[in-house]
Image 1 (cartoon, rainbow, N blue to C red):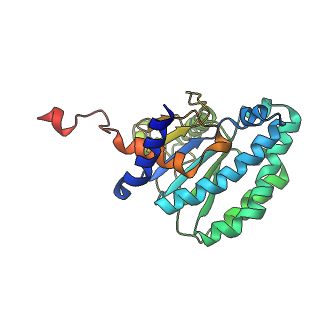
Image 2 (tube, helix red, strand yellow; image 1 turned 90 degrees about the vertical axis):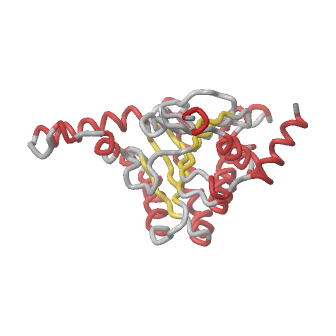
Image 3 (cartoon, one colour; image 1 turned 30 degrees about the horizontal axis):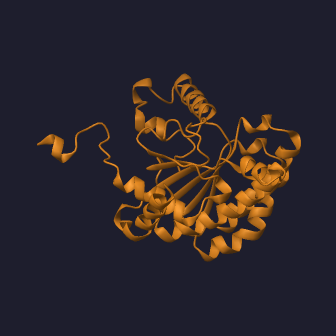
Length: 258
């Protein structure tokens, strides 16, 4: 098994097609707590190491030519976690951006954040908006954090906003098609709104209320690797798997069509 895994990683390194790099990759960064538990460490140690992985994967994705990297950093459900862990997670963006913004600027990466940021602590909001401001002129990859984000809440908010427009006579119900609805979502301002590839680490095979509308035609890759251990090679392997898929979007491929 391990020899096959090594072979697959080598294949990913050697055979990635630069013309088929997914424009938008979304990642559910799972397994920080289990990583720490395996080492007899507190859960927050896993989150701290996971932050270092974010830095690594951001630079690798940018170098590979990814246009948008969306990371599920904190969900609307994560407030249910122990208070000390939530406090640590809310402080992570402060530490992350304080140390990483210069590298983001050097790598021409622009920061974006989607979610209900008004519910975040003031210090977290400041760190986030400062990073957005400091990187706003960068023209390379967009590093998009889903922070206090939940897809059902996002869809509900979009429906409420559209319903208000209809009620006020600014919009006809017949005008609301898929494109119109997509433009009411939090991903509307991204250069590529819908991920082509969704990765979830740690062996869990759930979507967990993440980009439910946007991933309708995404390729899904689940890996047993815990997020703090997720490496450049693991990202390349996930992209390699993506490149082997036959993406038909409900239609037929050329062989089936003949």
